[in-house]
Image 1 (cartoon, each protein chain N blue to C red):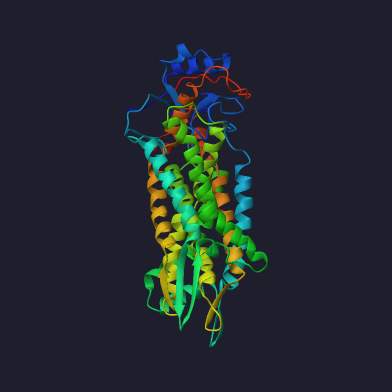
Image 2 (image 1 turned 180 degrees about the horizontal axis):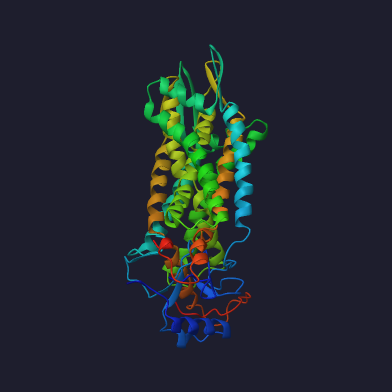
Length: 250
Length: 211
């Protein structure tokens, strides 16, 4: 069992410890508490083995889903996505031919196709949803996971950056756009002949990679890793004001 | 079965760490701590109504304006799906109809149902409601398909006099509607669903709320 009902004794101990200040060596043996963000149920949790999952048995939310070598995989896949996003933005995406007339567009042409009046807002939204936010999100994941995987202390502001990456998840719509491409192809098929450019295949590949990479991403494990990596930091280098007890062992 | 609130604790919704009640900010991830998001339902309804307001013109105005040699033709969301169906592409027509009509309407209904049932303090089917919320959260973004289709077509189909496609005003209002319903769903604090369970069981544990 990865999750257990919270033990009152452990609980009062932890509460006292966090209120009073930090006593890392004392706290080292006590299991952590984890709360379900969806239904507020509390569990005591021990360190999971690779591959273990913890599901809230109250509401069914997956709280922990560890995978062997997840960090390294997410890092590699994120770098691949970042390269593909940049390359796909500038190469020809789709081309069309009808009665001797042709047109070739890149991903950025697609995203900026709303030009008249207020529709410019839709262009801005489209650029963000299919290029900007996905790129920002994988860059943030690389920034957070990179130093940890290299055995270094976390990058400055890693917490804020990782929280941002998590918040961006629903707004990064690469796979939705891929299905949109399929629909568009059918819509013009009777009007003209379409050809895929290299960027189309890059985009299709990156949509799949994003989905695969997200299956490896366990937010709880990354927070634990950030916290553990934080303890590698030599004693006084950061002058940043960090509130409360920092040295809590995970 | 103990919630963080019953134990005098507060759960961080960002990283799932538990802190004593009154702790303002999670020391691990820096997220603001709130036992329950009290303004949650207000924001849910505000975004919900804005989304609904944007959804009405999205269905009335044209999404796409197609100019061909034979004339100008403008199609609404439903009109476009019917046109695809006429070409025999039933699968694609179904995707468009589901993404732009069924999902948005079902989302409005589902969010309203969840918010109302929390306001009434309904105690039954909590797990189903949680499940419904997860579906709404997962599926909402797929409604953007139609906006992306319009973007692709109006960038690509620019063949001078033979054919050109331009976006219509519905592209903007539909995109706004999708974004606002996503914000509405995300504002919802699901812990409010489960509070109905603790509200009825200060005495003997009631079997109704469990699992």
